Length: 397
Image (cartoon, rainbow, N blue to C red):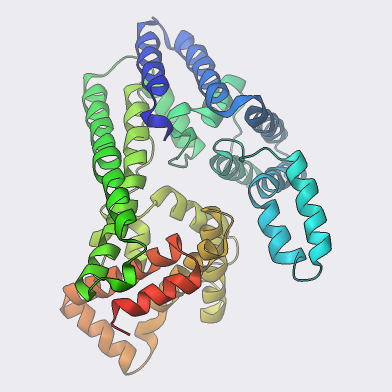
């Protein structure tokens, strides 16, 4: 984790100190832009920076034109770049290998020869933010004309590695307001948030990772209670790990006067799958809603189309987490859950009865939701066959 390296901690302290020692915002912004470039260069290296810088230039220039064709072209380039660096080998295996193993082997060899060992740092976040920027400009929003402002939006170092996914109007407004003078409240809240994030990540998530690793291979031999404790630990681990990242990013941004969007809001208190996704990875789920689900038609064209759009949106949400089928299946699993959650009350008999039960006894809705989410985490972490086998063992089957 980048946030736990000594280099990052020294960098963040020096950057924040110099940033506020500079007397005017007009000096702070260029310094912050330079610091963000240094951060990216250190952790991404030249091979990781080059494609991102190129995408930044293409996105900035396309946005300036406000031309729909130029924006669509730039979106296509951004998405194609993400697909190449993150999903090329996965797509070859999924689409080409079933037709011709020799062709798939050839394409895999050639692709690996020109591809770095790892995708460029933060490319998923870059592409999602560039996508929403270009999409909004194409729809008539005002582009970012100042290249320094665009640079700061694109490569703001606290959110570069693990989000949250920013929306540019809110980010720039917060940057302009927060950079005028230091705020004791921002510092207090930022430091508290950073400390909370480090506790979640290093004390809770990392220790849970160790404990779960000790029992993972022997899951089938655990008693029923032990298996459920394992799954609860798995659910707590990903929450503490991911929300810890977000807290640290939000905290360091706040030290610089910038308010990043919240990413988690007690998701394990949700009493429905819909509510869960309003509380879990909020910046991603809202992005999927606004830039995939709604453009596909959302819920405007009947139940069948609504379910189809939800499955497509959450299949892509799953794939966003990594180039593997179990991520896609985890996304589809939640797409099914959301579809059922949105429509079951319309089914006479069982659906109506369940709706009345959940309204009368909210605890029942919470239990069903959390069991569904917990089983989903098995799909998230393990191949489908193994995940379903583990899920059956949770019920003594």
